[in-house]
Length: 235
Image (cartoon, rainbow, N blue to C red):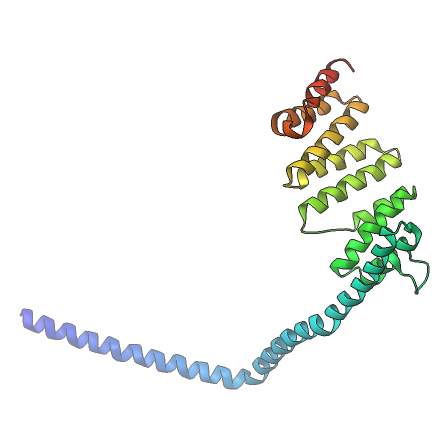
C-alpha cells in the first residue's frame, strides 16, 4: 500500500512538472507575441531614452562646460577689480566690455560661478547703500556650502536692518546662527542676533542667544556673554 502511494506521488509530481513547463511555454509565447505586437513603440521608447541620455551628456559637454568657462573669465576679471579697490568696475553691469559681477550673474545665473557673482554683487550693492537690491540679489543665491549660506543670511539681515526692518533682520540672523556647522560662524551670528534682540528690547530672545554662547562658545566670547545676560535683566 505504501509503495502504491509512493508511485502515485511520483506520478503526480511528474504531471505537475509537465504542467509547469507548459505554463512556461505559454508565457514565453505570450512574451514573443507582445514583443511582436509592440516592437515598434518599444523601439521608440528605448530610442528616446538613449537620445535623452546622449542629449544630457551633450548638454553638459557643449553647453554647460563652455558657459562655466566664460563665467569664470568674467568672474575673475571682476574679482581682480574688487581686490584692487575698484568697486564700481567690479560690480559692472553697465557695458558688455565690463560685465563685472552683475553681468556675470545676469548671463550665467544657471552656473555656480554665476550664482557666486550674484552673491558678490549683492555685497557691493549693500556697500553702496542699495539695500533692497542687495537683498534681492542675495536672496537668489544658494549653495551646498553651509558656512556660505550662513553668511548669506547674515548679509540679508544687514540689508533688512538698512531698510529699518529689524524684526525681519533678527529672523534672518536666527537662520544664520543655525545654518553652519562651523563653531565660530555659529557663535558670530548668535552673538549678533543677541545684540539685535537686546536693541529691540526682546530680552527673552537676547537671553536665549547669550545663554547659548555661554554654554557652547565661551572660548570665542571671553566671558562677554555673562555681561549681556545680566543686561537682559535691566536694559
